[in-house]
Image (tube, rainbow, N blue to C red):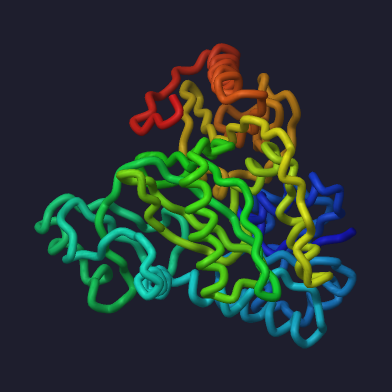
Amino acid sequence: MRVAIIGGRLQGVEAAYLSRQAGWQVLLIDRDPDVPARGLVHSFIQADVITDAPDISDLLADADLIIPALENHKALESLKDLAKKKHYPLAYDDAAYAITSSKKRSDSLFKEMGLPAPRPWPECGFPVILKPSGSSGSQGIQRIDTPEELTGLGPEKNLQNGNWICQEFLEGPSYSLEVLGVDRRYLSLQPTIIEIDTEFDCKRVVAPAGLSKALEQKFDEIAVALAKAVNLNGIMDIEVILQNDELKILEIDARLPSQTPTAVLKSTGINMLELLHSIFHTGKIPVIPTNREQEAVVYEHIQVGPDTLEVTGEHIISEARPLRYRRNFFGADEALTDFDTANRNWVATLILSAKTKEEVVRKHFRVLDTIRSTFDLRVLPDSNPGME
């Protein structure tokens, strides 16, 4: 089994890790020679899928699955055209992605379906959240606390041009859920907890989520309803926030997510890439076991400086040097890291598992303390502590 991953940053790291866990041979293509996922794959080709599409066509000919791990619209169009022309197995739903990659179109969909979501400004009061319509994750997000702050924004953030979304700021725990679809059949997987840093960047994923059965069923219903609405063929993730015992939808994205698939794999044994392979090769969603005992998992990002240690957002991984896979990394079961004994600046994604949440939280503290004491570091306080 051979897969080709297009894009080597955060999504590419996720795809590379899941592919290696499945035992597949992995080719990575990216225009940047030093992307983080490069150290996790078997082979690498430096190329731009927009300008070099004819040159990479033969490289993709024997791939059993092509995984786009980027959000550049021109690159995705180039891949789609190439896959259509050559009949390549591209794990990409263009129609669903067109809706979900726009927060404006997504928010309109939530409203049309009568689904609970943050109220748009000016129907809500302050504080509000301002976010670019065409970016996923935390990119460009900022909190606005007063009308003066909002009116003082530069012309590039003009709310009238449709490129920015302004809506009420909600506080509460955040959760993510993946749903897969093919031929009007849908399957949702395990919900996870999303913990963010002060810049609204995901720093940690915890599984299982520990939602009540009623809320988990409601989350499943929301996910399947949205998958039906966009006629999903592939994978989509839904992020919600729990406020006053109601799940409110923050965003949806019809593409391979980062971080949560690994947490789900380690907790349930279900590899989302293997499910995607089945969807795009057989047109079916395989039957998965539902009675497997779930492990408790913590998946988190740390940044180490000359004298500091900090748990922080996912952007540090996207900007890292090529990562390597390590087992028993200072007590962590697994790690993806650019750690180098000759360099005092490094990052790592730590993957921790245990039988219970209490055990995995204790392991989290032991691992951080081992790293702190080994390098004589000062642990920076977490202003948005979450699990701690």
